[in-house]
Image 1 (cartoon, rainbow, N blue to C red):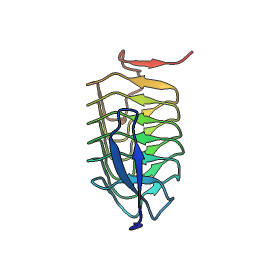
Image 2: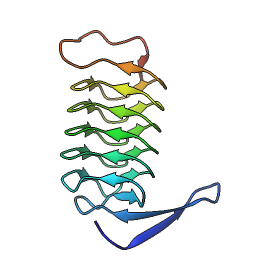
Image 3: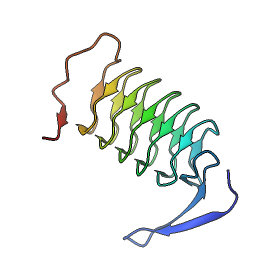
Image 4: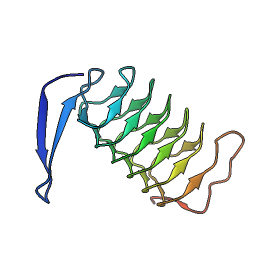
Length: 141
């Protein structure tokens, strides 16, 4: 991790300090934890309190919100928003342009197709053997 901090001010006037991640140069808030084996694209953000385990991949323009947790081996595509407090299980894949609601739980090995929206507080079961799309997932037209 870089020891040089960059400060970014929100529209509300809050200032958050970010450092650049060593693997991909993405922005990591000073109180977030990102494993060094995780790739974090240079335009991705990890907000305060978030935790990203090892061997994850976070794509361009993605935003991991406050207190979200990504388990080992998670793939997050480009332009994805993982909501505050959301938990994504081991080896799950979240396609590009998805929105994962606050406090949602995505099971291990689940595959969320691109352009999907997961509702806040939703629980998506493990991807092993499940082929039906749950009712609380919507897809863009």
